[in-house]
Length: 350
Image (cartoon, rainbow, N blue to C red; front, side, top):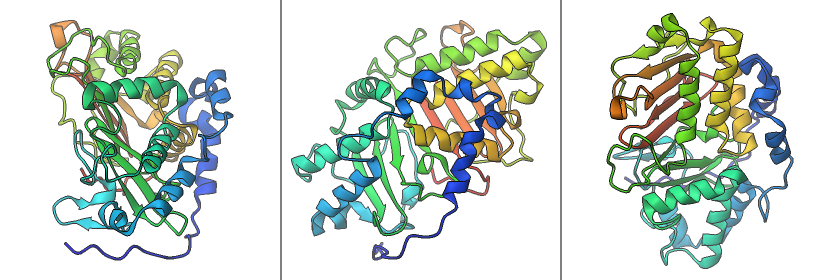
């Protein structure tokens, strides 16, 4: 399929400032801003940006450094449609490459590889760098070995987005171009520390398992009647994460029916979920959640299916609202699908 010429147009007048201002109203979404951003996270938010500037500024530097051949291979128009994969910018999968050249190949100059690594680190919270690096080492032989990148639009000239893909990774740096969408679009993370894909009831070495531990603490805090509502027999397809809207049917227990103490535990689960990412992306998640009615508009479900070892530590669970889906599959190893926006009309391309 012929690739359309990259757009060169003035930056659109987006209302992102008003939209992200709502992140400051996190109490509406979570009941207490302190639960989402404790002192440690607040200190991190005030930390200096990555060396060389923000991730978005580094994407612009990377784009400007690309040769015509490199641009032809990894750069696309904002709304580029792939003949087989649809709208390529918004695609998400558990193991895929958005473009063919991997970061560690000779296709990229050493300085370009350094820029890509700096962008990757810039969109991840500093305290999570080591854990993501471990995940990449276990799953792909190290960051860059199997990862590929793409740039959509023209950085510095209108909408643009940088996408990193690979095994158990789809990450984005959108520079607030994807309006009303957290993370710039759907993302994916996962980890298989055994390298075999076998069931591992204790999830030894899995860097993301503490998120499921926190969710199971919440399940233990439910009373008998609540557990019956929250526990569902069959899990949906893990990649089934399009938005259902305010009138949708959701698995599990409505968060609105929980006690204040239990809701505080939901807040802690959400804090754990967004903790790995930079502050601006966390803020976008909260703004999107606020726009759709806050945490009270969500449901939480745990699934009997995939209970490794029959230990009733639920390996598969899901937090879902009108335009918020965080599907956590821990069986046989961790796969997590994330799709968050302020408006359920946003479409998913998986």
